[in-house]
Image (cartoon, rainbow, N blue to C red; front, top):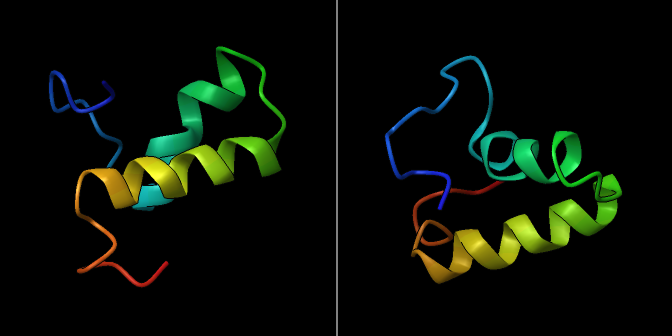
Length: 52
């Protein structure tokens, strides 16, 4: 998971941190990566505290 070593980029939003590897590494299309990012955000409980 992306949070494994707490290597988040402080200059990026939460959603950008969640989707960065998908877009750059796996080459997912941005819309697809955003959908997966939202699902991850919801799964780990960040949707309650974030309004992105």
